[in-house]
Image (tube, rainbow, N blue to C red; front, top):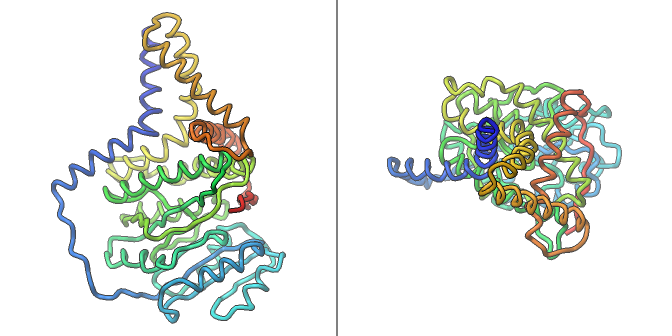
Length: 392
């Protein structure tokens, strides 16, 4: 029983650390760092390098007019902002809609090779020193370009990650509300990661890189945004997280749509760990490895399995030792009961925020298992299967 007790506490510690403990560690490390560092002086000189806004769009006719208007409203000198859409494989009229508008460069071919195929091909048409990637259904704030490019004054910066925001509705489904809460927490972690050393990856809805640092990515890559940004970090460049540059989109329309997204992301996460295996070596990458393992690797690998194993271990300890193990076991029962209530109430307009986090947390970890088996079987297609978004 002693070995079971040791195993239980180790598993519980890893779970706690991956989701909450790492955030606490970041707060403490930043306090220490701030004791020994002074804020740099702001540079008042205007900085307006040439920039390309790059959108890989597949069959986005439903969103494309809004995206065009949103893009043309960006506050940046028009002669220094080149707008590029790559619409490979689109057959719903997306390229034709785009070509009606002046100032937009459209590159199209009939065959479809997924988002990464469009990025690899489209980067050959980018001539500016900085490129900003965005999704067709993500609406950007007017100051997005200025907020991103200001960081490139620093030659150590190779990538700037924008913030992803989930649009709120007065009434939301459990998965939609949970997604919003999750991204607010993730944004806080990313900001602390960035302030400490480097953000860990970027979201495809909005991120930018120095064009010269781009390297073509394997054509079967599932998380192109993560691979592109982390390979830049692995080469010694900093990823800055800039919440002043943000992309807004609505939550997934249903649990089915959100699960579809999450399973793909989890399969891509495992693929990324394999392809970025060098980053697991802290003797070579130091603090970056610590951040990468703490923020990403544990969540994509050990934690989902540990969550499953900790339940029977807790039950055995409760029967033998009682005390705190009774509280912990029934705490888990209560948590997963709230998740089941969230599942039952899914797709109903509700305000019961108490069930949002347990429900979303549970589907994330179920998706991790499904993503694992898809990755092992090689059955996850590089082509995005569109997830429906809720109307706002």
